[in-house]
Length: 256
Image (tube, rainbow, N blue to C red; front, side, top):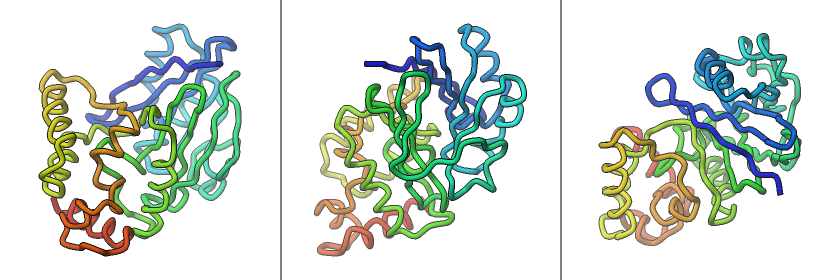
């Protein structure tokens, strides 16, 4: 089994860029490079050569470093077929259910629209690693810029269906604020209370709260729990359809 070595780079205050190194072949991918220089510095320090650039969606804080990194390394840019016109330097177009290799590590593509219309996620099953951009955050989810609440709910259900031990590598350090919002929805969730305390402690030490396990997200992230009775009650919609509950959660978080 080929497991990736994963390096996390914090940039632009709260953006995470990820380097994925497949040691058998030496192949190295970068996920959502908002800027190029910190990526190049980390690659040089590790002695890794960039071979792939993986984009989850077109926003500049995810693709801003594409062209510089492609120019310096010759790396291949991979992005959504549905969003090809908005991904700088794109070489390989992918869609839902398709797969490709980073060295010997297989990546599966999942279309997860909602935040943007062409958003995708990358799932590396052997490494139990999910790179989900701005669709799913630790304790939260992305804003609905180009999709509907129903679309986003179905996208989150796709991600929620991955194995419990999946590590969720999202693209931003928003967890502390997300957790405080979650407590306004489920005040009697003991796992949520414990996680909030842990998150506050980690941030107090200036440590990242990402990645988190999918099992933990299922137990504490209200946006993955819109079909759970306690969450429905928490937003005053007992008996409502999950997509309606999700829409109300998103509306409340937008003004939190």
